[in-house]
Image (cartoon, rainbow, N blue to C red; front, side):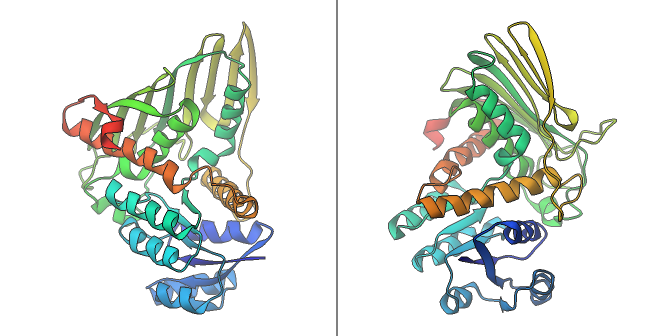
Length: 342
């Protein structure tokens, strides 16, 4: 039985804890949070009695097989380095780091310590997106040449995570990083990127609309667009929509997880809705299922000693896209060589 310690007991960490309880072969034996009330609430809710307000104490006193870091981004580097120095495999929530310098340092710390590092980049683990990836692998629509990954909503994310409204950077760093990672997952790594951003909501500091155009090394051209200022007739949060064009057909993932495959003149429709776990709630169940999926993947990787799909090293490529997007937006849609940023 793997024993894990979770650091950070805030809003999203409860999804981690629910998922851990459902996965065979693993248990969370200790929790850590600087807020004692929040820590006690999580301990009581999930039946964990070993509670700490200091991460170093938890790591020193507990016999752990891994650490799951679900704190805000400013604390990620010291906590990852702390875990690595103790020889503990690490999961770290996204955004992985505030900048590429910190991200590289975290990857290097785990590499030198010889411990696995996985970024909790869960969007690509959503069941509908895995279904689309499987279709691409099956060559149903031939050679892909164009794609669009879209997330547009007016959902009030600030009520659950108020700190998001105070950051100078918002949608690309918090949501766009998921959308960019999906584009990498589906179409491969990126050579050049251009981006434009807007702030529509006057009550926040950062941008809440972003559009990014990318040229992939595979030859695919893609558009990633995201918005928290888009009021639709039907609120689709937190659904990601896809459009993919290939030499022999198209794939469309539309509202409410409806998948349309048009291949060689034949159209097929499927519903690829996520599983609603007992602890999950709509509309979050799509994200909540992906948390379960990625954490199950982590357990499998530890057992097989294989690198996680969203390893720290892999996530450096997604973080480079975030950095390139902000650089391009600041340069009025300037085309950015992603390798020069990375």
